[in-house]
Length: 389
Image 1 (tube, rainbow, N blue to C red):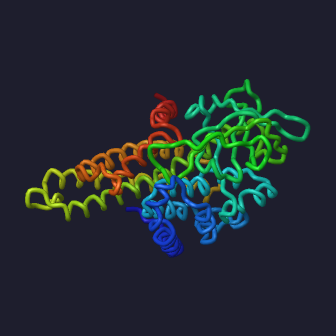
Image 2 (image 1 turned 180 degrees about the vertical axis):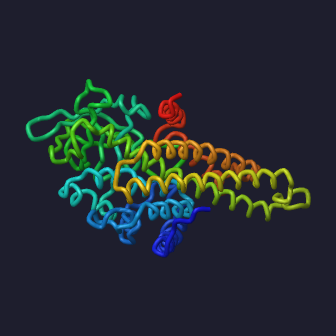
């Protein structure tokens, strides 16, 4: 398989793995019960350079390429909590890349650099109660008022939402213009009129907080607008590719770990006098699943190679070819994660249905992959148009 990792990547992998083994895995079960991991984990990750390894040094990052983010996303699942992975990846790969792409020096200094150090928690505010994958249907509005904008509206399904120090927020600045009337703002949550309506209880990813947010006359300086007005939808479509790609990377790594854990269980579990893994029906099943994981891994790496070439070598926007590949990878990753989780739970029998076994948590957590960042149905619809069907 294509191996893009050099010595610096391997050293970074050792750093991330040590962080996961020391600061996440021993506490993951408790954080799942608490429905939250501590804010200090962001700071620990920031201090180790984990959050910003693939950002420019001028932005407070480590100056590495995108393969550094791949290393991070592959190691985090070893912590045993998809919720922790989600919270950290929103910080480093979803709420902040658009700041690096569009931010002024003042915005980078105030928001991006502290986020990469883990000193400020970031959230990405896009989805609304009536607008999930159909982003153009958002209704949160920012109206100009002198040198400021007044924001009114509501966001939901916002990871890190209960504790974010700022929200990278998509709003309508031309309410009647559809997708062409959206803009991005950086909104500190300390501003009057911002509130967390409630923390949402989810069927999985329990250690991450997901919130419903309200904006009631929040006055934001014009200087907090990211990029050009009414170009937010275009910016989001670029940002979405980062979110979808990192999800596929993490899913490929997570499904492999889940299979490895199931096989270990099968070596110890005896059924009718023989280890479960020695039963031919399961041997064939696992051969097929491992084959599919290897195929997914190879395809995901191809996507990363294209993305890295676009963004870190050519320094250009993501090409349509890369967008197509990433969307395919996201669909394939979600489908395979569901297939693997279901098979592994079945392999465990009754124990797979018990919370003490990691496969039960994985079975719940992976379900988000076919929803978050654009549902599989919407991605297939988008791909069909892109491919001229």
